[in-house]
Length: 198
Image (cartoon, rainbow, N blue to C red; front, side, top):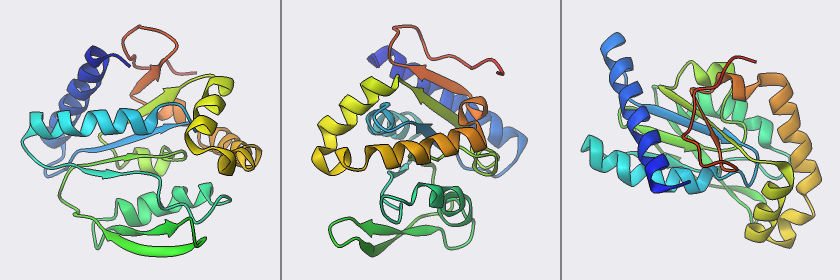
């Protein structure tokens, strides 16, 4: 994405947060970014958080996809996000220690601070209802695979097919693109758009 596109997305996030706060006081900004592996979620999240912090004057919590319980655990996001990460009481999650293939340390979250979460499986009907902005990152499967394997190497290469099946199940079950307020397609230079209903 270009800097202008990222600024546009950040502006939309802040506008959505202001609107949600006006309608439902008090409500903190919660941004969810979903999309297939390699679609640009992490890059977008890392670019947005400094802009959002500077523009809003407050810290933003950034949650990446370090809570899946292993390579077969994508579906855990469907309950971990609404029931633990976005919970109003004692929010947080246990990081997964990939080298040990076991649960790691717990990360505590502040229920009042703005939060941006990016992961495959982030957008479901339950999580969408808890967010102020919902973003879908779209990119074709071949380009995503090249990116993901270039980033994670042979470790992911051996598990790509298994992970792709889990993503497909999520898409068929929850239709995350339909839940999005903003769709980002890196194949074009067009601004991010609000998706039409499919």
